[in-house]
Structure formats: C-alpha cells, structure tokens
Image: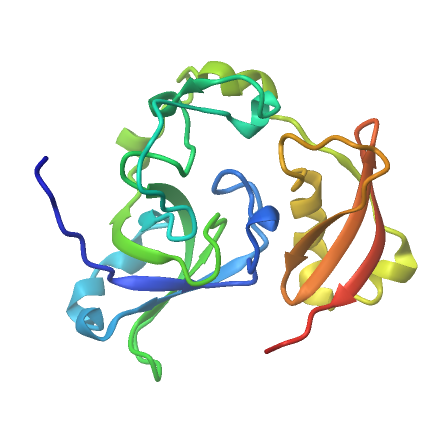
Length: 231
C-alpha cells in the first residue's frame, strides 16, 4: 500500500487528562477552554494571517492514545450500548484504518506573541491533553453546515443526557473555574458504554480532580471528589 507521512504541527493543552471525561463529540462542552501550541517549525506569524476573522475552526488530529496495529471493518459505538456492531466508516470510532480525528471548535483568540510563539485559544474541543494536531482549517458555514443532514443511527440518541446530582458540600471543594464544565461533562455520561451497574462507583478525571459517581435510572449522583496528585 502507498504510505503517506503527516507532520505534527501542534499539540493541544487542556484539562482533559483522562479519556473517560472527554465529550464524545466536539462542541458538546463549550465551557472548557483549550490552548493550541505549535511546534517550533510552525511558529510563523504569517501562517496565522487572517485567522482572526473566523469564529470556528476544523482541527485534524491523531488518536495518539488509540493506535492499533490492525483495524476492524466493524466497531461497537458507545451510544448503541457497546453491543451493536456498525461499519467503521459509519462511525467516529478512534479505531480506524488511519487514526485521524476531525473536530469543529470555536476560536476564542489568536495570540501571536507569547513565550511559545503564536497560540490559539479554542472552546468545545474533544481532544485529550497533549493530542497531536496535523492540520487546522477554517470552518465555513455556507458549505460546512447542513442543518437538514441525516445523522444515521446517532440521531435517536443525540439528545441523551443524564440528570446530575452534585451535593453542594462536594461541589464547593472543586475550583470554581471547573464547576460548570464538570457538570456538563458528567451529564454526557462518561461511563464506559458497556457498564451499567447501578451499584458501581465510576470515576472521571478532569482538571486535576477525580469525580466518583453512581448512575441509577438516568440520574448521576456524585459521591466523592478527590484532588489528584501532581507528578
């Protein structure tokens, strides 16, 4: 087979330090701000000329934590309970012939002169901290937006959310800047798709904290929060 080489141009920095807290699609949690830091060879101010005129961007990136030797023509989408197989090209599974991800994010700012060269601040990313980015393109609403598009098997579950009960005494332990974002993350149901034990205590790491919870009858209840040790 023909082999192509892609260059990593940047990495993303944010509070998503573990995969189970990451939203399953971009744009679902707008409150989390990410910073895109470019590799030295791409810190050219001219490369960003005109970018401030756009409100949204496409990020092309690598599923660096989900790379496998081979690939399967079918996968188990989480929103179908992890039990129904679909064709890999009908899903956004990370386990693909090429581990390439595509995300639409909102551009918050372009900072051209920082200690690390030009950086971008974006909202709504679904990339884990440290994820390599291979390209950035502007989002064009007149051609990229299709409000009447069909969503296949994902349409029936697109509005799926859990009710979140976060006891005030526990919520007060969490830094204020993280509170709204973690409520949105938990509402997206960060459990592995194949686990539905109402007695089990699950965990999701975000922003240097571990949030432990149980889910019963569509209600997620936080039972413990713990600050993670910084290595």
